[in-house]
View (cartoon, rainbow, N blue to C red):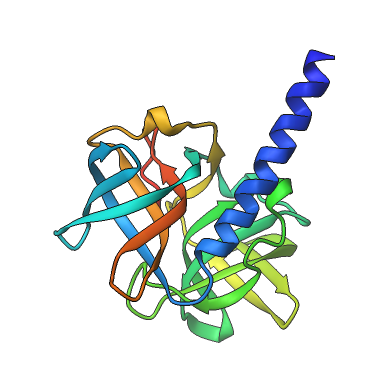
Amino acid sequence: MKRQTRTALLSIGMLALSTAWAAAQDAQPTRVRGTIASVEGSTLSVTSREGPVVRIAMAPDVGVRGIKAASAGDIKPGDYVGAATLPGEGGKAGALEVLIFPAAMKGANEGSFPWDLQPGSTMTNATVSNAVESVSGRELTLTYPTGSKQITLPEGIPVVTFAEASPADLKPGAPVFVPATKAADGSLATAFVVVGNQGVVPPM
């Protein structure tokens, strides 16, 4: 009975995170990458990769997930992934990183859209319809409602998945990725924080 209760709670939690993840990346998103400077109540201050300290208001029920290393070999057809890519040769995009989503988050913010990991990069959240090994490395075909994309995974790029975490892991010095929304007055808010609580910097 305890195991069933734990499983049910985990499923509910992942569905809530799926909703938060999609909502946080909706219209006019602001993504903050950096390390935690401080946490004061519900305010998360992050020393951003651009330099300035950014203050972000966290929702009362903020979702917090850790990040842990995976491998290209863990990716199989049917998995739902998020891949940041740059344009490549032969109509194939080169991956900068890949996040393997938990099954409960399948469909979160599905599609392909501009991303700011690097200039000219794109994020594609989609289902893996084909995964093969080639001379140049692993290749994936990602399928989403409005199209598909072929991507290559160069050796050494980060491949990660979510791990357990809690607000207690939001400590000064911890690396974070925060998909936030910006209000008309410029203030930032978020319902979801990804923290590097297992020695892995969120690569998104």
